[in-house]
View 1 (spheres, rainbow, N blue to C red):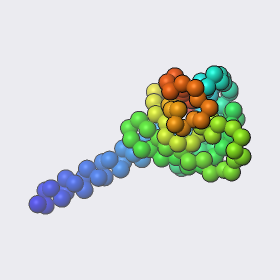
View 2 (spheres, rainbow, N blue to C red):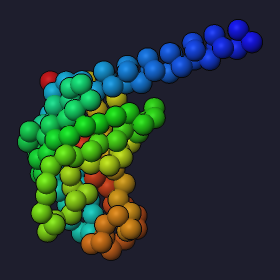
View 3 (cartoon, rainbow, N blue to C red):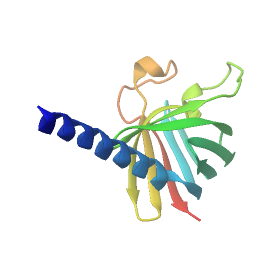
Amino acid sequence: MKQTYLLLVFYLLLTACEKDQSLRNFEGNYNGIFNASSYGLKINAPTEIAFANGRFTVNEGYKLGSGTYKIISNNVVEFKDENYWTAEFDWALLLSGEYDYKINGNNLVLTKRITKSSCFLCKETNNNSYQYKLKKK
C-alpha cells in the first residue's frame, strides 16, 4: 500500500514538473507571422508576442490583446484574452481559445482550427485555420 501511495505521489510530481517545463518553454519574446485563412479572408500580418509567468501580450499583430495561458496537454495550450472588444469583427482573430502548439528549438507554431459552428462567416467547414509562426528573439 505504501509503495502504491509513493508511486502515485511521484507520478503527480513528475507530471506537474512536465507541465511547468512546457510553460517555461513558452517564456520569452517572439516575432513572426500570423496567418489566417477563413471565409475567403487571407491575412499575413507581422506579429510580436511576449509570454511570461502564464501571461501573454500581443504587442504587434493583426489584433492586439493580452491575458493568460495554460498548457492543457502535450500539444494543446489555452489562451484567455482579458480585454473588452466590440462585436463587429471575427473574435477568432484574437489569441484566445485552444491552440495546437509545436515547439522546435526557438520556433513556436500555434494553430487554431476554425469550424463552421465557431465562425458565423465561414462558408466551408474545412481549411479554416489561424496560425502563428513565431521565433524566439
